[in-house]
Length: 109
Length: 112
Image (tube, rainbow over all chains, first blue to last red; front, side):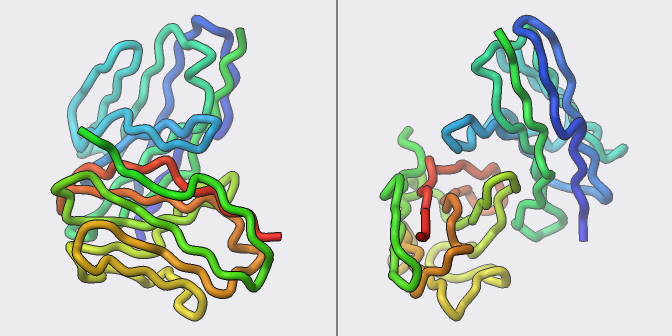
């Protein structure tokens, strides 16, 4: 089945720094999503981005479907950005989301 | 627009007891999902409904877990009897058919 690999697995930033998180998939996926899981366990939708580029405030994401990867950019990081970032997508007509293992981000003041 | 609602938020039970979780999806969302998330891992799909029919329950431990969505709207997930390894966060999500999935706040289950 499709594998989704996220990198880096862990990241520590100083407040104000920028970062790029990557999601590689072994085959074509549809409906790629990025989520932020906060320290209380809530999964928050960041982007629904099957292809192209989207921006929302300090966050932006780019998916290059033909090359099977997606990037999440965090600029001017804040302590509230801490948590785990997941990417997930599904393949073909299968609605089941295949998840990466996540990137654990800690932003220090 | 109201999000996905779940209750309870927290539950502590002893092993071999029963527990039930409730989920109300976003209005108009035909597809409803139950996930289990063990600490440090990504969510694992337990069961997926489209309206009131089961689309995928291949990873549901059917000897102890059951779920229903009788009227195609809200859903319940039950564990009977619970084991220690069932301690996890149970997440409900909904989507319009093949689209973007939205998650509820989850129920954190501790089995002692």
